[in-house]
Each structure stands twice: as structure tokens, then as C-alpha cells.
Image 1 (cartoon, one colour):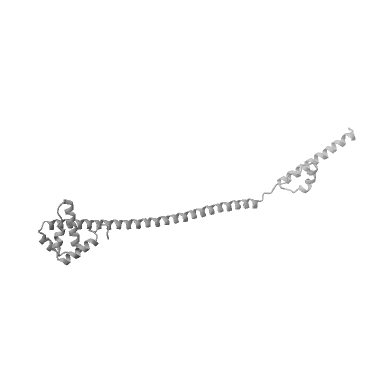
Image 2 (tube, rainbow, N blue to C red):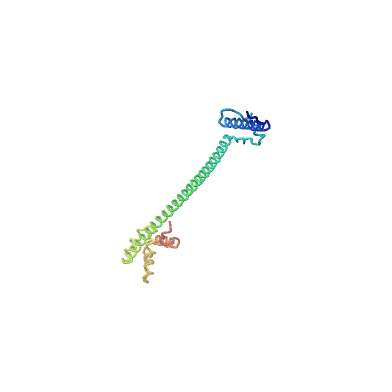
Length: 214
């Protein structure tokens, strides 16, 4: 029967214990990873001794993430509100400018209407003046073609203003033609009181009304 040296057996036994310890430690760590057992209180000191302590898992605080999202959302809402406020102010300013423009446009239209009325009134006066002058010219020519006595009989029926305007037109036509004026003849044939009144008014009143006179 073979005899074993006790000196050679001791290291083998020690290595066997070490192997068993490693297997136990490895199995415990594996079961801890699988979640079958909680071996951290047992293996923690060993891992710390071997400087192999596992890194702590940093827990994510989802409340902080939600807070950041909420703050970002508030910033966006604030920016949108400021943009909407700017648009509202611009709309109000534009509305005021449109209102002021419409007011100025109404004033311009009123001024144009007044100017148009003035022009129409002036044109009407001008037409009346032209018609009156044309009538006076024709009447003066007709009177000067008559016998002075017949012409004075007609003139004496006129009112003072028409008589004055007719005598002045007779004088104007005679001056333009370079002929003798019958105005003095007509005045001499009129009744003395009527002739004196007409001569006095002719020196006081203007000639035939112009279209600018009211």
C-alpha cells in the first residue's frame, strides 16, 4: 500500500479549499445576479477586500426630467403668448391706422364735393353771365337799329338795372365799332327825373355783373 507524504498533501487540501471557496463565491455572485438570492451582505465585505465592489447604479429621477419638460413647455407657451400679444398690438395699430385713413379719405371726399359744388356754381354763374351778356348784346343791337324815339319807349319800360346794363352795352358796342354812341340821345329822350336817376346810378353801380359776383 502506497504511503503519502503529509508535506505534499497539505498544499493539495489548501488548494481544494480555495477552489471550493471560489466556486461558492462565484455561484453566490451568479445567483445574486440572477436575482435568486440577495448575497450582497455576505459577498460585499469579500469584494471590498478584493477591491471588486460593484459600482452603484445611479437611479434616474424621472421627476426631474418631467420638471425640465414642464419648464420647457412653459417657456414655449410664454413665447407663444408674447407673440400673440405682439400680433394683437399690431392688429390694433393697423385698425387705428385704417380708421384714421378712412377719416382722412372722408375729409378729402367732403372737400372734393365742396370744390365740385363751387365749380358747378361758378359754371352756372358763368353760363348765366354769358346768356345775359348775349341777350344784352342782341337787345342793344336791336335798339340801335330803331329810331331813337322807339328805342327810348322800350327802354323806359325796363327796370333801372336792366336799363343801366342796356345803355352800357350800347356804349360798349359803339366803342368797339368806333361809332357814335346813342346813350346820350336815349338819356335826353327819357323823362328828366328818370334820366337823372339813371345817370346817378350809373356812376354808383358797377357794370354788368361778372360771373364771380354773387
